[in-house]
Length: 281
Ligand SMILES: [Zn+2]
Image 1 (cartoon, rainbow, N blue to C red):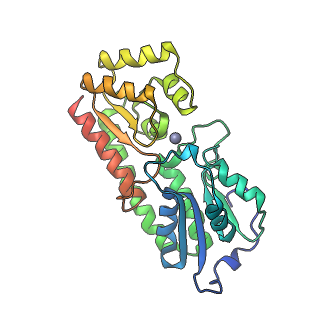
Image 2: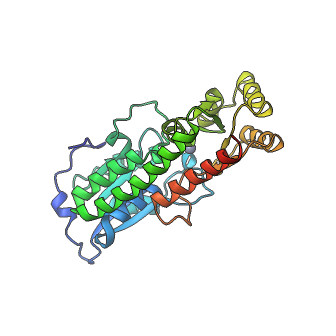
């Protein structure tokens, strides 16, 4: 049994019964990529609400209003990221300590520790851990098997990219895709700059100069750019990359509105990375 963020959850059986209105189980996901996974596992057996869905909204800046508080209070199952990514959810859960609901903190499922980069949405293993847990709670082994096959497709694409481009230096304006970059065997350059942007602080003069040098000398082969959360410093690096012919791949924090599934989202981003490296290696 995997650990949960907030206490133990004794009343799982209650979750599988429809409510008075016949709506079945209500699941609230802090971010839409978790809602997407929940939908695939639950099928028609639950009603899923994702709070963070807007591709133009900075998830780090979100504050919950009354509507979100009500949705969380009414949920049977709540899924959130942890690692400081969605502190607003922890606050809502603290306000209303309902023992009859299941709370799943996904970073706890992968044994993440405090201080780690919170952008775990690009880690397919985190999504599989969530899917596995939900499939047990919702009694949906067939849907888990389907989900597992999608994860196999992602893994195959990852292995293909790794076999071709392992060791190739790349960089990013922010470590949104850091776990994937590492899993692909790519060399992640300019980490101090990325950490500063992640922490909402101004990158140092040295980190900025080093980033510029890596772009102007074309020693990095790709720039990953967070299209959802921008800053003057990251905009500037994007412009320098453009001037120097470094391919830019946009990545997002939440699942884009046109994405059909978590796997669709990841495969789209992986294909964009592969195509960019194909043209510049
Ligand atoms: Zn972020």
